[in-house]
Image (cartoon, rainbow, N blue to C red; front, side, top):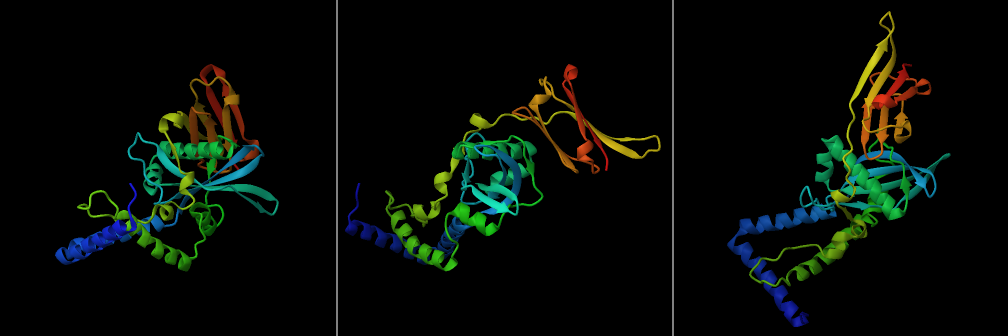
Length: 315
């Protein structure tokens, strides 16, 4: 039902009268209300912050290194419950060349509470990473490698670039403040059109200001669609010594029940860590106790008991 200009003006006047009455009758309540609106407005205008960066590969349409910056952003809503979809937003891919290295960077943002909960739970963290990768594949028609590792740096590229990519705006603080000042008035008028005039209307930023360009990219992905339980396999890690008790090599035995071929295993080894992945079944990431010689590292798969044995000579 359309509201006439006169009717809208009447409601705006009533709204401001309500504010005046509240300020006079309950100054403490008025102060709390204003502070709450300022707090919510500040959260909605807050910029995303980097949490961690992971490296993987784009396999198709063109093979290239991919860095995914996982960011926390208060503008992204938290899931309503553990069984509800998890909202996230994905920025546009940005291709970069440094000397001879070419790579792509994609920024992904979750609600801060989601990332903080996953920080304490490796399984949840892996699920969020897999969700982000699947979302990237679907949104940009990429095929990604299932193997990844978390980098030592929290973000690839500059924070300014990441903010502009996700927020979809130039962070000119003067222009942004002026735009918000004007649009907040429109938001107040819009909020005053509530059907029940006895309810105290909320001061809200208008929808177009809250969403920006990024919210159209928010994907709500149900856990029942993509969350496959990825287990950490049983393993034994030990350092083998010679007869003089000098450390020679690190040996890792990993039990992979249900796996009958080494071709199903994806192994990545660096000097100080190791990653084993079996698509949608197992994932094991270990920090190695001593630096190893990656070129001399060998792996052997025993079909009879589905055991992978990795031998890593020390440097």
